[in-house]
Image 1 (cartoon, rainbow, N blue to C red):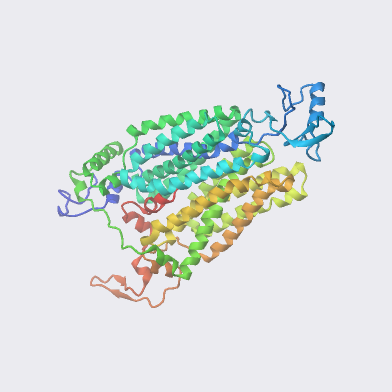
Image 2: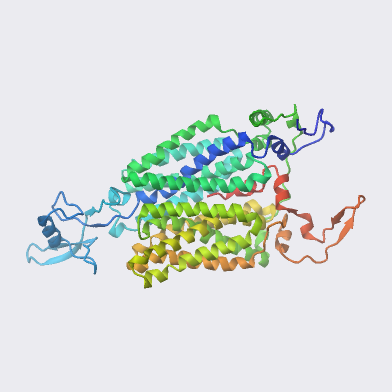
Length: 589
């Protein structure tokens, strides 16, 4: 049987152990943790579904003005008589001969002269979508930007959820925060299907956004705090794979369910099953110990040990010692160093542009690409998973910087290159545009995963939570802008309008990739503890002095700022909450 220090196991009774020592004995990713983590990952699928469902329930439908006083008018011409009525009432809207979407002929009763006026009623093409929020509330013509406004409000909910949920989870616990978000998630997403006005619809979507951000935060932190140090990068990326898997499931369901409210109900009612997590998901033992609830933490740990087939020594928990926070420094000091400020600006730009605006924008833009919307949507989700696999395989081999930059340059270059097939290729080569968009999405997904770890490793421990919160604000701001860029084709007509969103995404991404050359590599480098360490990070160390202690081991003096730091992997293994669970808690999508 494996032994822990203390009691009858060969160490003094007053010796202390750290919580990660317990996790090591339990098994860093044992059967118990795998069961809990799998359930948490299932919940993350709903987060991806509820964000991306707007691709279908707010999908574009071709439309035209309805013929006045014709009660049964339809977008499809039903007869010769219908054809004559439409031709006499609706002007042609463009060079292709399509009927006007916003204008109608009206005759003056006295003179009989005809003039164009704005119509108040529309008919919609139901060949792709039987019904959408657009057709339900007539969000066309003067209201055509309402779709972008709705998506922006959803992203605003994500922002509020990211800011508030971390604080709440620290106060009331991870499990209560999780269940609170489950309740809000279920109520708001189901309620959307019964919205009888657009205002009510966007209000419910705002609360859905809060619940998505809060739910994913609780899922991420709980998962991180249950596993051992060497598995945290794995579980941090695998949960993103489940997110993308949920998006793929959404695409399949949407193919068979073409009415927006029925689709909304179909993907939302399963969220009620998450109420079972009250009995299936434990509270975080780390949080319980930090709050002094040792008996509850001990019960959870012993149950986990039983499931994992290991034995925990009696009364071992009273020997757990939680690390104290390091000394605090003022956030204002981070803005006094030009060197550090340049790095912070680069990271904030990356979070805003590539990690949120481009990632979400490309996903939302899948409905604007040529070809079948359902196939394009599935391919977007598939290449997202490919991006996460690239991270798992290369992050600890290639490095953060030297994997992040190629992902940005290749992804952004692919998006930017769409201008060429749009301007110079005919319809038979539209598949090139789709392929370039898919390459862009793959790069965006990989960079989205990398930037979390990269930022955490560049920020000093004493300010890491605060600075990650700053970058999170920029990420959410980018997410709020992304719907408007994705819908630029509604403002700019023609083929160029269809490519314009990808051009904007590509140009901003390439700029971000070039900026990242100014950042240092962090793989296998000492983790900065203080702001001074962070400022000196990446510099060639000069004046470093070493001395030998009584045992002959080499130790560094304070002249070497990095000597006070530890490699990231060592820091994770010593921290009771782990670097990721500590720093990403305030910055999850």
